[in-house]
Image (cartoon, rainbow, N blue to C red; front, side, top):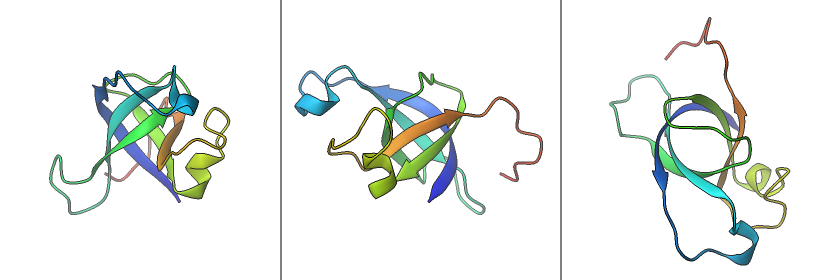
Amino acid sequence: MLKIGKVVGTIISTRKHHKLVGSKLLIVEIYSKNQRAGENQLVAVDTVGAGVGELVLVVEGSSARVSIDTDGAPVDAAIIGIIDEENNIDM
């Protein structure tokens, strides 16, 4: 399932699975109605060069594992896009 979220932080890891070496891990707050800030955060592998404060598209589960840069890696969530404009996003 495709979700929209905002990058709110970074994760620094000195040891990773060999397929994640060189990958950036970001904390993403997923947007959904009726939620408080910090209630729905996850760690996602960045495949597009996103940064803190940006709105992003996130996939979870098997979709995350087969994204371009994470093929076969032990990944539960991946950032696959950056949103440039948020005209009609109901957050």
